[in-house]
Image 1 (cartoon, one colour):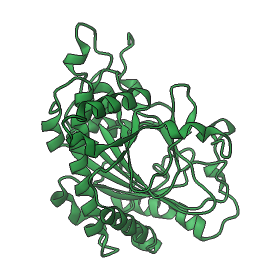
Image 2 (cartoon, rainbow, N blue to C red; image 1 turned 135 degrees about the vertical axis):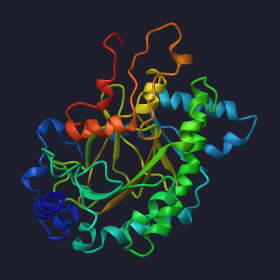
Image 3 (cartoon, rainbow, N blue to C red; image 1 turned 120 degrees about the vertical axis):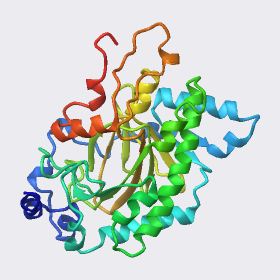
Image 4 (cartoon, rainbow, N blue to C red; image 1 turned 45 degrees about the vertical axis):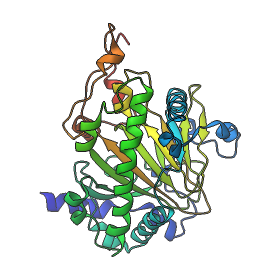
Length: 356
């Protein structure tokens, strides 16, 4: 049965890279969004991008400055659910190595990448296109490889063997982002008034999924997207982008371009932090635009609690009130997206209590 499913998948699979490389003059119909969902490229949407917060993480280690940085993180999380970090401790050589490994992977022949193709979201390593090309109503101009990355020794043997440098270069980046995540989750817990080690045990036992994304040059970027509006399921996502393309929704439901800053990483709050904070912080709704001229790569390092560990609002933040959210685990999320269209309804909306 599995062989048959794989065969059907192979027959129907066509990646965004394949379309770009074939020189298609326009996007196939399956990629065309309804007019109301199309990006308004070329408008003034990015006019307030300079207001997005940038946090110098090295200042967390300065005793006299730490409380000021924690306040800045609190404001960024409340207002945007996102901030960029500089002086984050990951060397430029590690970042460049990861981007090089990804470039070489997506440049491999189609047959080589197809060895890892799967529509099963529970697979620990899978290559694909769009969100899930076998079920998507509208397709998105994106190819990806996703793999579990923590603990690295448990998963790395399942990662791509080609290109030969992939495991080493992407592995180094995965390890570095895991260390950075621990530092960030401590600062975010502290910014909520919780003990900085509130999630320490769950973080050390937690999961890390690395989504390596490729958004090829697109002939009609104004009528499609690389990713639809969504929020991430985990606690935090640490995003590395090779160029601009990420947009976030602000409190007025306007789309804001997140600028590309060389060497910086983007920190996005996920659904687990929204639930843990009882809604004080919100997970950021974001989407990805594409462009005509060049390919864009991104690494989304998605950090979450262990697969079956339930997260619920912190009692300290609920007080005498009723929790605004039900509890959930990473596995609950995977089950949800296996059976539902998460473009139509966000998973976190199913957790909100009716009185919140």
